[in-house]
Image 1 (cartoon, rainbow, N blue to C red):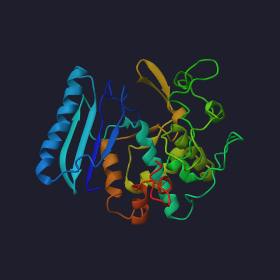
Image 2 (cartoon, helix red, strand yellow):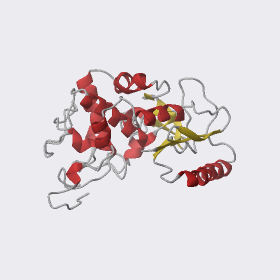
Image 3 (cartoon, rainbow, N blue to C red):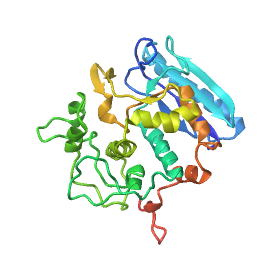
Image 4 (cartoon, rainbow, N blue to C red):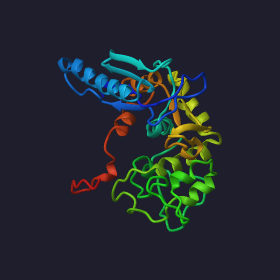
Length: 300
């Protein structure tokens, strides 16, 4: 992982003050290995990225907000922000980049022996009796076979889960809309699912005895100086067009807030520091071991 990049784009809205975030159609995106090319090709790659974001800014007639930060081997190749009042310190909603941040918190706890990949799950909420005993690695690796509680999920009354979740729901209400039927048995395949990380968040809160944000701040944000990063719960207007998105419903799966500067601190920590053991970093960036078999067949 010799190249790091963080970018934000298409987050429309007015400048916001401390404690609030940019709101819009698309959230902060972190790209790992954005420039896996030789030094001679890096300037052109940076120019290509800048061109794409500039074109998007023009399409939004200047209303978009973005923050680009690209490094290679500790050298800054590109740092540029778009939109009035936007800097590399401006917080954006992360969306699904909330998941690797939560995975890093788990990895820190596992490194210290407080958790294990093989621990049975204990989310503190009723799970369908037909489900097998899951291990934490099934959620971390998306090999549980559990269906997504949001995307493509239609409730019994015909309402889409996305519409239902625009209002703040309790963990029991969210658990009740998770589809019972699974895609496959654990370890038989891989399927990305927001449910995996929402359940992981419930497990960590139960074990920790506090909020997910407090856990993340102590385990990850504070040690790395990520002062703009948090797991938010307040409703955000404008994140789904003109509707309101209740971030509490996406806990662990999509409710983190961060800045380009903080994400660069995070990526640096994964690329040569004592934040995590080298064995843990290797495991985080390796294919899920249960996706293979003794015959070498790639099942995932």
